[in-house]
Length: 77
Image (cartoon, rainbow, N blue to C red; front, side, top):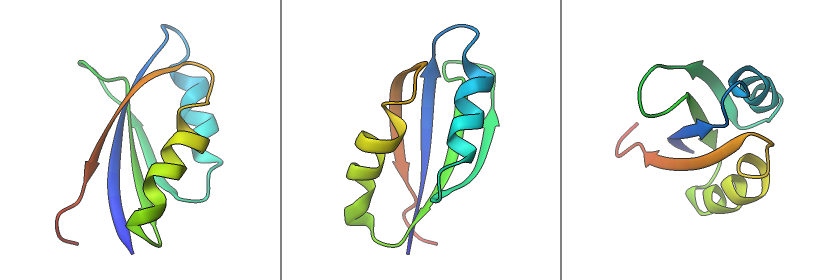
């Protein structure tokens, strides 16, 4: 089991829609809209860290409104 935080920049006005789409994904534990450089932070809990890249590329980045992501992998749970 692995945990990561995905920081996302979104198109202006798309933050709520992106957060709703993220909430539908199985590996997404929580989402928060934040102020600052990024718009949304999502906590991801995934069975195997080797699946994380595919999850980001196939599930998160295709969401309409997501313009950039940055991934932080938890060093120790």
